[in-house]
Length: 173
Ligand SMILES: Cc1cc2nc3c(=O)[nH]c(=O)nc-3n(C[C@H](O)[C@H](O)[C@H](O)COP(=O)(O)O)c2cc1C
Image (cartoon, rainbow, N blue to C red; front, top):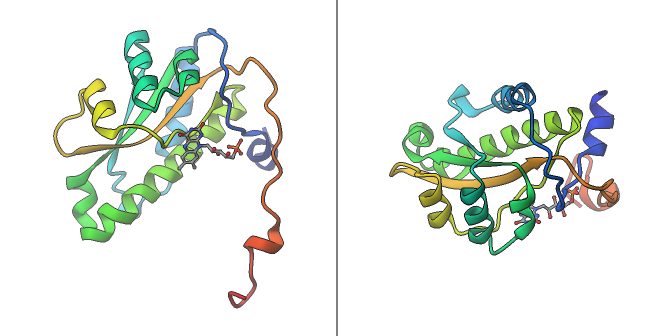
């Protein structure tokens, strides 16, 4: 799929079919996630691929009961390693590591879109509960989640914000 088409096709999907994600498709999506840029090429995160139904149900609960998450056959959880992120001190922990996850998540989501899959970035969740569910070792912080699966509808296109409100040339005015 052409890159601009893929970018505009990606939409947050909050309703999934039960269709399983083939292993080779999942691997391609994960390859794309790891091809993202990362400060110092450290990639200070781990990606937990959750397919266990009970764990997925508990993650949905921990995500303020966003029940659509539990419809998906796969849930991806990103965890940041505080120790690895510390390579760049406080800035590494508070900024770079989260930007790295953002870049990787977007790669993952675009790759998923190009392969006919859908996603929805989920940031509203109880970090401690999610860390417990995926058995994160001490020093790992759960920072982002997305369900991964097949949409049961064609997602509604929400127009992007007007360029005139978000983009400036030469100076912020
Ligand atoms: C950091 C972040 C956190 C988000 N958290 C949630 C969430 O908890 N639940 C949800 O349904 N959508 C969440 N979203 C998705 C946004 O609501 C969505 O991207 C936005 O409405 C634009 O729609 P689109 O993704 O279809 O373009 C989140 C997105 C981002 C980037």
